Length: 211
Length: 211
Image (tube, rainbow over all chains, first blue to last red; front, side):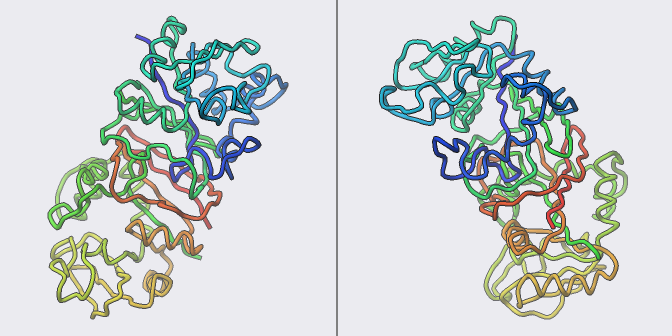
């Protein structure tokens, strides 16, 4: 059985985005700081068409996760930041330009139907039947590889409380954001099982089993 | 210069106590689960007058912290769970019985003046001039050892935002509580520096420099 994993970078005080997101600053004020650890890595730069970069304990963790991921599921807000009909969404092609870094099928949970969108090696499919159906389609697309729920916080909390997730991969960045979008805003209480911790001075990676 | 440290056990979703605290269950519903990792340790049992127990990577971390701690600061709520005049507080001698496990001076921040209270090897002093004065008195009492802010969440957040803390020691327990008392409810945004991570299957210990 392949795994359904949720992966995200979080501040020590539990935020996965800062306050006041805009089209120019989709992660809100200070939100880019959550991802400072990943930007210098070779594995990140390669996916964004850049050369060079670092290889270290952080990149090993990321590479292992990426190698096992065959499809992604995300919320509409994470895809474009918008809501409502697609023709009114100024960011309807998503945040990632002509060649998004997924290189795999991405299933976007939305209330608004739309034909699939292919950009570079990534195809976005739009699923209006809810998160469970999006996960089912992603499992079909992933074959024997894992499916990753990529965010945002609301989709992740829903998947967790519905008992759908097998694993949480949380990258805890060394900062306090104070306000913004909280992960785990009010999830159901439950024990989880710590299976792995890897850290550098820039970030701590946690893997928890939640199934 | 000696350090001012804040130490606490927290769930992955950021809670340091569960909902609905009572005199019988001061940490609220599910809150005891935050401390399950420490109860089997020899260093914990010894402080509570019990024999036996485990020594492992968790106990090494706790022992090192305790050895360096010369005085504690805590809020009134953490001391007794009460508020208002002491004569109306049914738990005015605190949670810990005749021989509290501190073995050091404890400075309790309160609005209500009171003579010092000695129980076993611990003396509680009651400070009505605010947290900065409590920390000043604790530093005097600790001499060349460190001072620990022991909670609760509100006192810790105040000390952090006032720039008083040098270090955060956070024990992240493998569970989600969903509701209760949040640490970092809304602190000022700031970078912090990860200085140490130690973990077992039961808990992950973080040390962050915040000065």
